[in-house]
Length: 340
Image 1 (tube, rainbow, N blue to C red):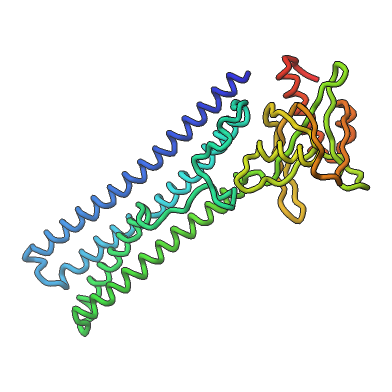
Image 2 (image 1 turned 180 degrees about the vertical axis):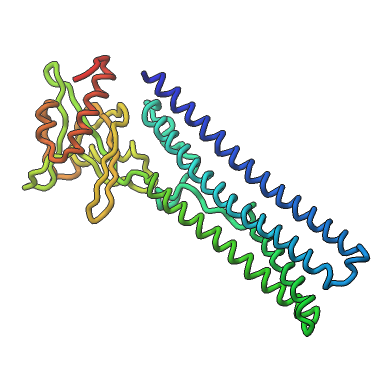
């Protein structure tokens, strides 16, 4: 089963990688096609203007405006497709990062890949993808569309507004270019910002980490539960905040040690539990085996060891019960058993 799981992850990684690069290549192809159409359109416009029948600006202007407007429509469609391409690329990056994290959780027992991260974020653990800087293909298309808008403005003013001098026409064209280019760049940045915000929520990193710790007792095993406060009544699984620069595995080991004094050995990821308090809590839990104990740093928490069935009954939340059940299945699988 682990070999099949590993093969599935590798196949998914290969598929998403190929899909991302195919999307990137299709975007470059669209931009190159758009540039080719502009070049072809410019050549055709020059050829028409050189013909005797189109010697006057009034005669050539309708054809030039129609041609520029057609190219602008192609440019706007290309811009929309580039925005979609960027969205697909960012989605693929988050998906690939998730696959890598899953691979680390289940196949890196030694912890050699704990700090392996191709897209490290800043203080916001969920902001794993950096925003695109000005000068990419999407911005190039926006500027080319701005030039087309300026060209249309020049063609219209040079034939229909006689009072405009060449200097005033150039000024208006410059303003049209600046306004339309900036409007498109603003649209692109806004669209990318909304996508990144959605992806940050959909692929949010854990805010907390904890351990489901067991210890052999008289031929069986017992699980470790904690109770907050001296007078608390809710028995929970030990967990706590992930600190900046800390991996989830490191945080889980540290929190178990600080809350209970138990030094554990990680055996694998169990699952995540999400709920809302005054803050968002997204806790990732790992199965741990007890290796030893030291004095706990948090003296306001009580703890106790219970056999699986009793621990299942003692836990306060149904999500914790489900995690404990999954942890028991994982422990039995590691021990070579098929079920509890």
